[in-house]
Amino acid sequence: MARDELRQPLRKRSLKERLWAKRPGALALASGLAVAGFVSGGIWLSRLPYPMAGEPVVSMIIPPVEVVKETASTTPAPDTADADDTATGDTSQPDDAAVTETVPAIDPSSYQEASSIIVVGKRPLKAAPIASVSEKSADGPLPRIGAGGKRPSDVYAQTVPIAYTSIDQPKIAIMLGGMGLNAKLTTQATNDLPADITFGFAPYGDDLQTQVNRARAQGHEVMLQLPMEPVGYPGNNPGPNTLVTASGDADNLKALRWNMSRFAGYTGVVNYMGTRFLADAKSLQPVMQELNARGLLFLEDQGSAVSTALVTAKATGVKFAKAQLVIDADPDPAAITARLGELEAAAKQNGIAVGTGAGLDVTIDAVADWAKQLQSKGIVLVPISAVYRGRMS
Image (cartoon, rainbow, N blue to C red; front, side, top):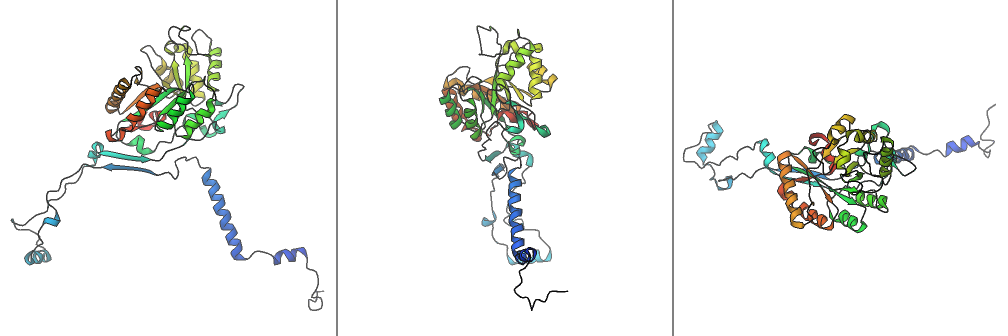
């Protein structure tokens, strides 16, 4: 029998009925769903792996200037007869009429000879280590290829706008090594040099990870300087845990992993000394195999005619590049400037040139001053990782 609500108006409602009575209205529900959607979308966007997203990147080509000898502002207005001719479809003009010269069409191919302006915001890099491309070891973090084939050489690299890699202008990449050994000079280089200058950190400094992350925060890519046996070793000695030809593969790989564990955040390794080790393909091959297995690049610095680095890198799948010259072999400001000029000439001839140097105060000052003039010379400065990509590889 149904309850008579008129006779029992003060009955206590069930929990289900009370909750239903307090249900949100349609407008409140729609608003809540919209807010949830915005929050979810924001979280999703924040996790997208696009470090350049939202940054202004402008590339403009300025075509050659065309001179217009006479413009419409200096041409007399047509008379009534001319207007009538136009109306009847007769557009021919008298021989004595003033004629405005037409600006000739610009051949797009001439843009390659035109000036170019590329404006790119400063691109700070994330602090290392990044868990997706890092693994723990007894000595410290080691680089590894992560899920989906993510390689440290890509994850730790500076994101280079396509305008940099595709534009037909000479490009220069410079790596300055010895960073981390002198904290004052490392800080000077970090603050004074353009972000596209790459730093090579030696494995022997103090508080290396902090110094590396400060450099990355200013946009500088980082490479690990790997000590290798030079001619005259051990009298000429790069330092502890140097890779030497007299050691077996197991000992060299152990030394390699020790060096790699000193800090995280590098895209690849560059030899520190090593003329003798690089000439021994048998000793070099397992090292290159390890670098490839860990997703790292290799840059040859101060190569020699007997180096087997290129051949061994190709055989093991390692991405390889070689520096053309050392900019501060003579640590004199004038000499460094002259060498930078040679680097410019090499870039104009080959499309791209790679130079290396040390993190000396004289080198830092010279490179900082030189870099300010590159735009007016039509030369683009790129990080080392860009040398291995696309049209520049």
